[in-house]
Image (cartoon, rainbow, N blue to C red; front, top):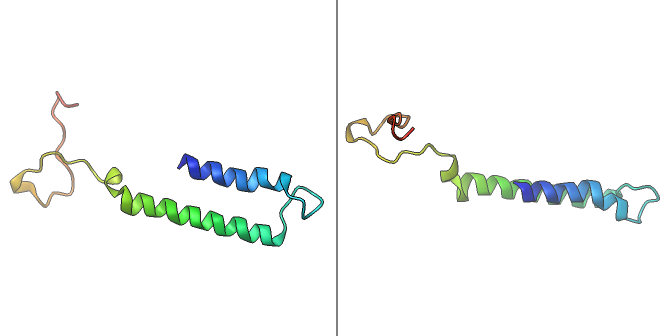
Length: 83
């Protein structure tokens, strides 16, 4: 997440100061299209990583599932010692 924010920040706030296609520190139309496409690719990559590769990071943790409670939507509450 931080790497994507850094890349987007550099593309949108630092890059316009170093381009020489337009007199003022802004981007030309083709550069805006490039930044838009790169932003879209970064966003799709971020969503892919969150929903497919690291999906288990966002699922509830269930270390021991009781046999009679297999269809329960939530994990049982922790004991006082675990908490």
